[in-house]
Image (cartoon, rainbow, N blue to C red; front, side, top):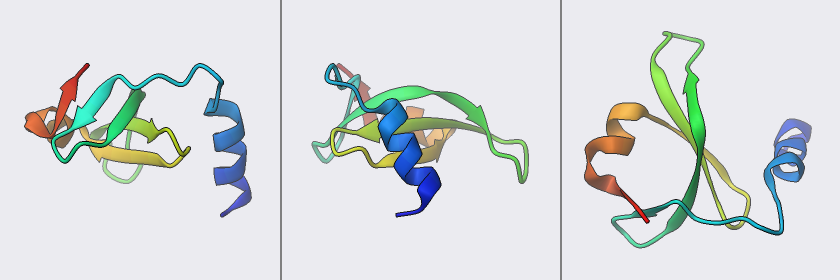
Length: 70
């Protein structure tokens, strides 16, 4: 794990982690918020799981039915 990833996990992890979405395969995730991908200025969302893994996905994919709000 890189130092940046380790720092991010410490900053975003709280005792009160609470899922906001369920993936259609069953995983639970917390939506952190919107962002802009630097390379092409596309809109993405940042989200994490209870283990502290952080994910980035295009907004269109996040909203295409893969994730359902809880």
